[in-house]
Length: 259
Image (cartoon, rainbow, N blue to C red):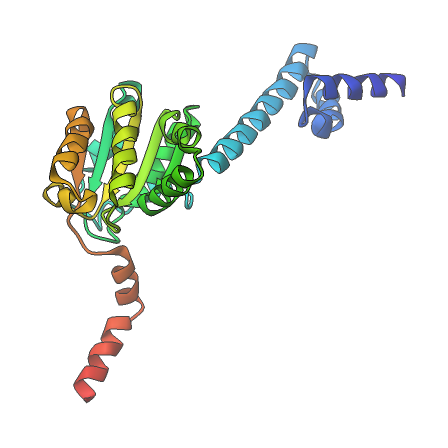
């Protein structure tokens, strides 16, 4: 009993949580299969390390604020033939993050831009890189609130500090002068220091309308595009695909014909 108490105290001091759960089962297995002390110890430590890594991934994924969890393997490249699968898998190696470069995903709504961005984010987390995800709408709202509460510099660090920042859905909402200025500041501070993945349904030629200033839009694009990869996606929406598969459009067409 004294040994058990000493072990429990040691586990607690080391911060081990998995070994206490499996110790007795592994001890019985070691005795049954005549494992050496080193083999027994190795099995325990490997399980503890795996559990620690799993906790790390869960914590980092939660802090990244991802809207959902999707991997590159779950992406239907056959449905979007305009995307070069080999190029996307090369980007998923995260070399662009090591080189502080950017990735810009352009295309109409529903073609998988956010899925690809999230997949790269999850791979970055697996490689122990810090990640933060935000929609452009939430970013603008957060910056405006921080500006009014005079906490803008503290909030800016949320967007400038991570190894990888993802800004989703640029173009769904126009930015006022203040928000556009802070967006430019984020891009400028991350320039050649940290990577950005950005998704947009607007071509670069329309960014002057998004930021309300063609000169400012040009300055933002100049920094974003200097070290970047741009992926243009041309295809049908996945949501439309699912509705077609469910017979939604056939039903509508039948109703139209009945009229």
